[in-house]
Amino acid sequence: MKIFVIIAVIVLFIAALFVFNSKTSNAPTESSITDSPSGTNTSPSSSVSPKVSAKKHEIIITDAGLSTSDLKIKVGDTVTFVNKSSVLVWPATGPHPIHTVCPGFDALAGLGLNQTYTHTFTTAKTCTFHDHLHASRAEYRGQIVVTP
Ligand SMILES: [Cu+2]
Image 1 (cartoon, rainbow, N blue to C red):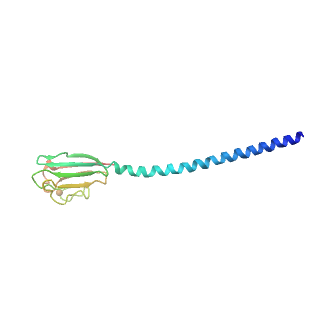
Image 2 (image 1 turned 90 degrees about the horizontal axis):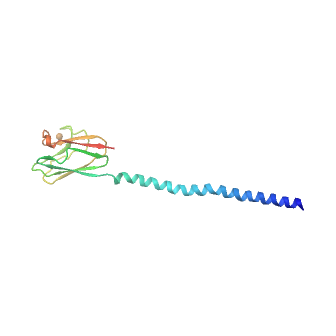
Image 3 (image 1 turned 120 degrees about the vertical axis):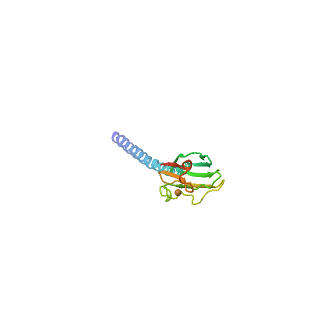
């Protein structure tokens, strides 16, 4: 009779071990399933944020000169030149006349009154510029410093 009780206790103990093991082995697989959706959520939001931070800047051209001749911007930002002067003004990157410092930064024509020229800066660089029609006019010279 004693032996039967001891065997019953051992069987119950082994059965309890099996139940405990199956519960602990399930726990890691449940947490690994819940981890993967949160990991995929972070990558789309981080790729969107650089586009949101792109800014638009304006340089106003008057007979007295430029509203700013030393503009600091970030890669991806756009700059719009607005001609409010009484003469044609042709913004272009240096050096005159080949315009190679920041390729693509060139209005390619003189801007009349209230006409605009917009350029998006995609490379981190200091882009010097001048008025291609009056390259020697110091008041129409400047630089746009593009940082990452
Ligand atoms: Cu030029």
